[in-house]
Length: 425
Image 1 (cartoon, one colour):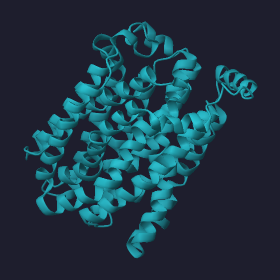
Image 2 (cartoon, rainbow, N blue to C red):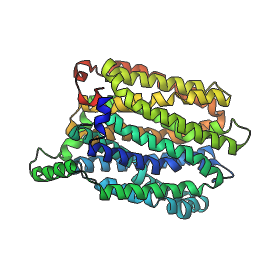
Image 3 (cartoon, rainbow, N blue to C red):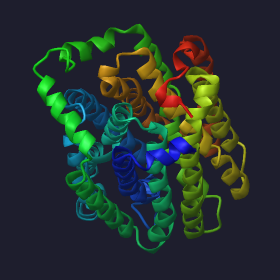
Image 4 (cartoon, one colour):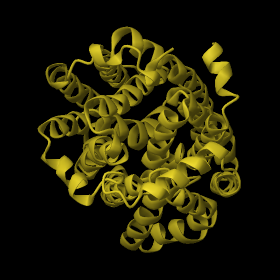
């Protein structure tokens, strides 16, 4: 608790926490209802499951390209905010883009709409989320604060807008996009106007050392990561876990959940409320999971996260009442922190921290996007043919197999964890 209180005296922690809160607020206020906007007949575009799968596949394809570029650029930029500011600029314009460009294009020129949307959404949100997280993690090591606590404020921001989003969506879906622009503007101003003294000093020191070849990772070092067998083992694990989580949670669950209610409006309001409660709990767990990692180790925490993922998706394949599915959804609050935090820490434990942004983008974010490119459309078609619940059961079995695979390929880390500042309580 004392460590938590001390964090509020650290300007770098406060600025990083506010940055994540505003970024996830700008993204979550429309992203939490993106699938419903695409499929809803009354408040959206009324697209089929296969069409939605195609959109998600295209988004993932463009996102993985941006992710590799962003990761390599950020490792060269070190802690400079250039990419974050670009993302914030796009977030500021998300409202006009959706209302006057993206929506009309998907209605009148579907293929062009997919392409334009994939570029904008990937550059502004789907790719940059990894950079926001990677930069914050790097700040946590440089400026001595707990990454998990800072990341929790991102979930807190998402939770606030998720509660708001359900009511806005039922009233007028355009309001969700305008709210995204509002939070995007606040994010942009935060990044431009607030730079703690310690960050300024660190940036200056980095610039002074840039002439030294060892201070900045070279492109050869970055591409050399692809020759590491252990990295490919992790990539395979991510593709068959986090990919299926994303397809389930983003592409299918919102529509499945709202279909359990007598009217779509009632389902959409309840989904927004449930999503907010779940993410509030997730924010709390992001502060607790580092303590769990200290007690049982990074590897074991990650295996627990995969187990919860398998159980949650599998149970949704059998439950049929809104109450039961709502209770199952709350497992999400345990699942995400117990997967993301140990996965991020696994990279910094077992790979070169100088390349942490590239490693995180390639090993985690890009791997998941590759999986989505390949699987989003087939799973969307499968959902159209056999229904949500049969698809969920299939996904759960695949995640179970991936969990068994992870048990054998993940390195033990207990000896590395003791006393590590990232996971101290």
